[in-house]
Image (cartoon, rainbow, N blue to C red; front, side, top):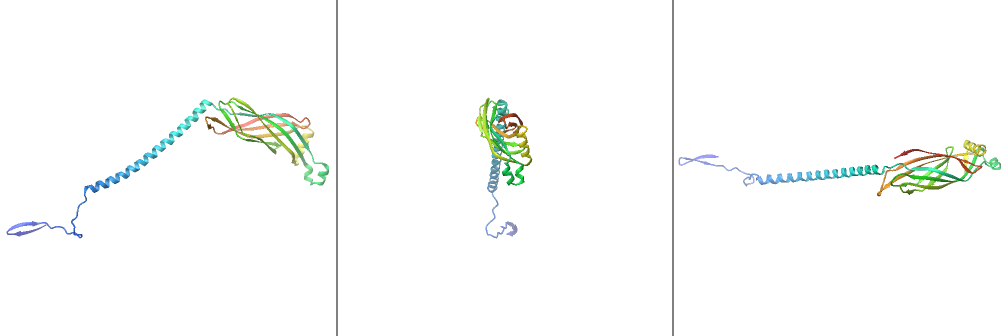
Length: 251
């Protein structure tokens, strides 16, 4: 601002500022700041909406998990599941033959063949499956190992089946082996047991898997381990001893 004297009077003259662009400077309007603030507020609203969706999804998954646990607890309390019973009921012997190599074949063969024996066996196994539960049970296929003194002779297969509630079912399978070569000390024991003791001891082991079925749902697997010891008389071609036990029940 400058002051000058005209006719004895002082007058003030305001000096306008000089701008490089030649246009006067306009201050920022309040509407600009309001628009910027509105944009920032819109971004915060989108983030809050995303967090709300994640929270709702988490609550929904938690509710479904608690509902599933509640259904399982109700089923357990109402049904009160019990372990099924699976036992070897009967063994029918078609034939059992223990033979040593013939003298002519053993003389022409290696010395190790002279201490061998051949076992031929054909038996029918009858199992009893008992379901004490209020609902049905689904059994999976089972393979029982047949052994002589720890030496595997073969496998007796039992197919899978379904069993209604409060019922007993008979399951039959057949096991056969033809001229199984038992070597070394086991062969000597087999020949002595068959000739002197009239007794051949066999062991039958296997795991039976079962699931409880209710309203289309299947429970976790229940495994029952079966272990049976049987003795067969080669002379009478019959079963002379049988004892079975359950080693344990695993979930």
